[in-house]
Length: 91
Image (cartoon, rainbow, N blue to C red; front, side, top):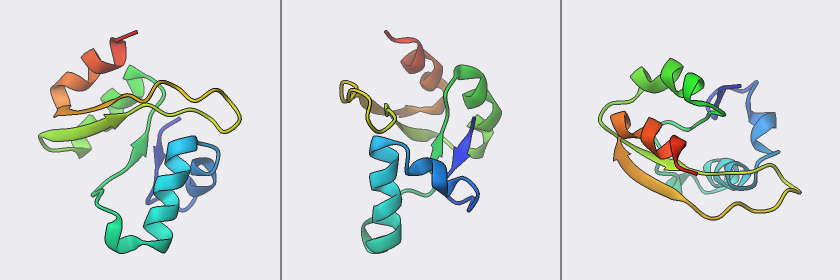
């Protein structure tokens, strides 16, 4: 499922994510600190392929997990959008 933080229908799903929920709250209550031009959640490489043309050159990629599940190792990178698939394939 592709989630877009700017889509009102998707906002409820952001509350189920550990980091995504925090970003949603920053956007709502501290908009002057919200620096993201776009914010999506994708679960697979196939979903990334569907939205990658929405981005220009550089993107920031982060891992996340649902609330109540073990926190994943903090991982993320800022890279060219063409490198996102390689990042997602890393174990």
